Amino acid sequence: MEPEEESALSIITRIMKYTSIAVDLALYSVAFSDKEAAQEVLKLESHIDEDIHKLISKLLLAIRSPSQSPTALGAIRLATALDTASDAAGDLAGMVLKGIPAHRLIRAAVNCCEEVVSLIKLRRPVAAQPAIIDVLLAKRGNRYLLGPEWRELKVGDTIVVRGPLEEVEDLASETGYDLRFQLKTSAPIVAAAIAGDELSSSILHLKSAARLTLDLAFHALISNDRSLAEEVFKLEDEIDDLYIDVLKKTYGAANPPMAEEYVSLSIFATSMESLGDAAAIIARLIVEGENSEFIALVSGKSEEAFLKIEATDEVEGKHLASIPLQDLGFIPVAIRRSGLLILPIPLNIELRNGDELIVKYYKPSEKEMEKKLRKAIESLGFRIVMVSKGD
Image (cartoon, rainbow, N blue to C red; front, side):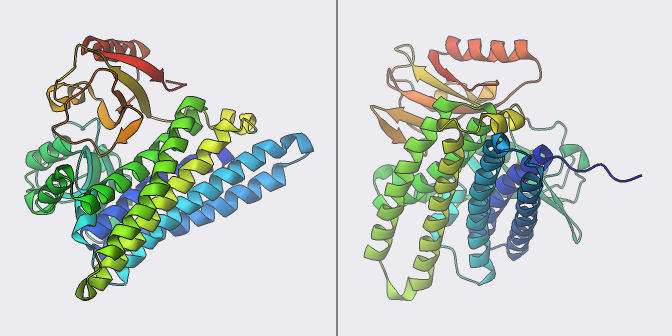
């Protein structure tokens, strides 16, 4: 009996998953000079390239008439965008393998603000699966597991995770692992950025904007959400400006003994800019409206969702940290105030009436529970102004 042929949808879903893992694993490998993690990124990049070639071949063979061209074109353009993003991850990993030291600002950018990427050694079992933490990679002896499920993990495994800072710290504490040595370099740099240090602020902003833009683009694609795609275009324009700004400030502050580290900053900035380009390609699939058949093919396959909410006078003057959004499972990722984007979000920011927040959350399995979550947001003093389609 011949094995069942893999569908285009299955290949696309895997490419998107692997691309997301590759980007964050590359960021981690740079921050901690982890050559083994960097090698895994290059393997992932190779898998992604193979899947892209497989997808394009499948779609070209499937075309029977001119009317089917938009579907294939949409998939090919998506594959191109994902290839761009995975190449950016590969560039970061290559920097690690070539022994180019990471500038302290890169380490801070990876381990700051609302979401961090960190290594944890499981010295005790995990009592309950953390809802808003992703496991990117697990190492067990000489074996690696990509994107494992929580139920697959064992005491003694070393894992690389992505999630909100407080949740990651709680997980590390529960499993008996001390994260302080990983995160201690970030705090003073984040503080300097908040205090007005221009280069620190630009680097943190660039990383946060690039990673958020790719996430939003993925979600806009699978939910065919034009309004979210338009938000991606706004962010991508800001990333382009930040990219030039970072290069100017980097070379303006050049110090010959630290030339290699400044090279790493340039590669880092270029990679983040490439993520923005990839996100814009994905967003264009929705905005141009030429690929509705392809969009229908991949629609409804995301566990993540995004809301845009607006602060009312009920929360005027309150610190964002004092409002229990994360307790409900909502992660604030950006604030737009008077047309300007604030990202990453300062820990001590006071909200103003009219502030727009983009928040990420994981969709519950029951529709009624999701409705309750949104009502809970409104009860905190926010108005929902954008709901992603398909949620």
